[in-house]
Image 1 (cartoon, one colour):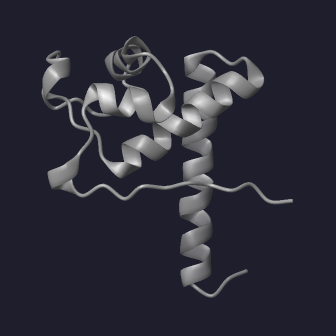
Image 2 (tube, helix red, strand yellow):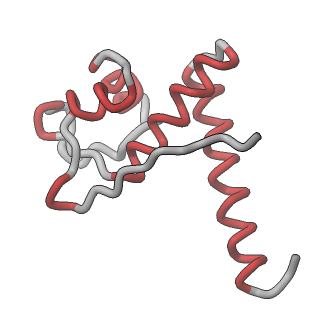
Length: 103
């Protein structure tokens, strides 16, 4: 049976705060901070001021995937990021192939 995904579309005006993202992923805010500081999550344009960070729906999806990989496979954050990056690249390339009419 297929997996059921829940998604929330967030526009730029309603971006999530650090605490909201952590709550949506069922993790501590420190988990999010650690992944932002290592560049795994969010390109923090606001630097080190975690109170100013805002996360989009794409950030939420990525964070949830990272959590899922880390928990399911007891993976460290670098391995989880690599798996998520590769999955995103595969999805992007499949979209290009589909758009070009190649199956």
